[in-house]
Image (cartoon, rainbow, N blue to C red; front, side):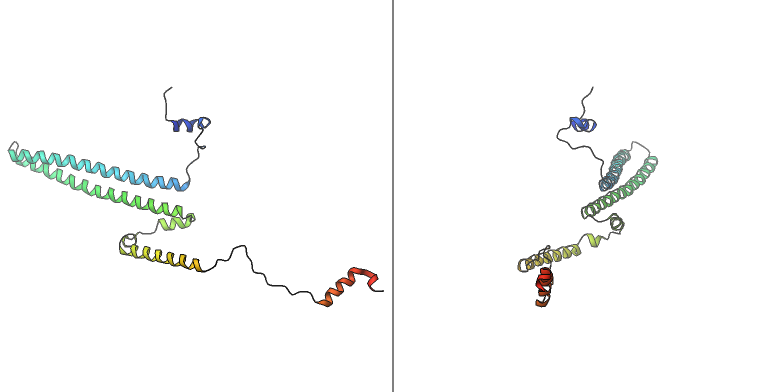
Length: 200
C-alpha cells in the first residue's frame, strides 16, 4: 500500500491522530472566503495565460519583421500576418486588463468579508455591506488618513479621561432607603407577640 501524507492519513483514520483534533466541516464564513480566493486565483490564472499568449505573438512578430528586413519573403503576405498578430495582441491585452481587474475586485471583497466576519455582525448586515458600492476615495488617499488620525486622537482622549474618572462597578446597584417603622407600630407588634399576658 503506498504511503500518503500524515494529515490525510489522520483524516481518514482519526484514531491514529494523537495530536490533531477531530475533523470538522468548514464554517460558512470560511467557505465564502475560500470561494472569493478561488475567484481571484482563477482571474490571475487567466491574466497569466493572456500574458503568455502576448509573449508568443510578439516573438512571432519579431520573426516576421526579420524576414521582411532580410527580404526572405514577399512583403504582402508578411504584412497581412503582422496585422493579424497585432489584432490578437490587442485582444489579449484587453482580456489581461479585465482578468487583473476581476482578481483585484475578488481580493478586495475577500478583505471586506474577512473584516465583517471578525466584527461578529449578523448575516443580513454582512450581505448589505458586501453588496455596497466601493468608491476609491473612501478606500485610499487623504480621506482615509484624516479619519484614521481622528480616530486615534479620540481614542487617546478617552483613555486619558478614564484615568481621572472613577468607574462604577456593574454589580453595585443604588437602592432607595426605606423609611423605618414608627415606635407605635413596634409596640403593637410586641403586644401581639406576647399574647393575653400583656393585657393583664
